[in-house]
Length: 128
Image 1 (tube, helix red, strand yellow):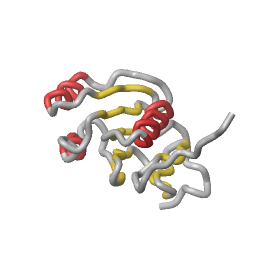
Image 2 (cartoon, one colour; image 1 turned 90 degrees about the horizontal axis):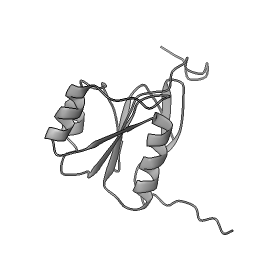
Image 3 (cartoon, one colour; image 1 turned 45 degrees about the vertical axis):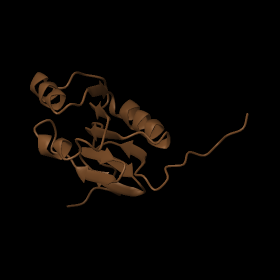
């Protein structure tokens, strides 16, 4: 079977994740993140609607990574995002990161709001 390396064409991929952090485009970022084709920003969680609102018109798909397990986001978050014209797609954060990367390689206008995996940061990443 021939393997083809994914090409992100200058977009922002999610390279990995662990307890309390994500590796995004080669850089370690702590805590919740909002990632889209042109970059990533710290995300304040379900109350941080401004960060998502800033992407309206620039994305068609919004995955929501709920941490280790799939869960439903709060109803008021879903209603607010739907009011923006987006349909949030909740799943576990690992699944959301993989799905985001796949759609990114297809050239889709996609973003993902990620809650981190539970657990302590690895010692090499823990700092004040």
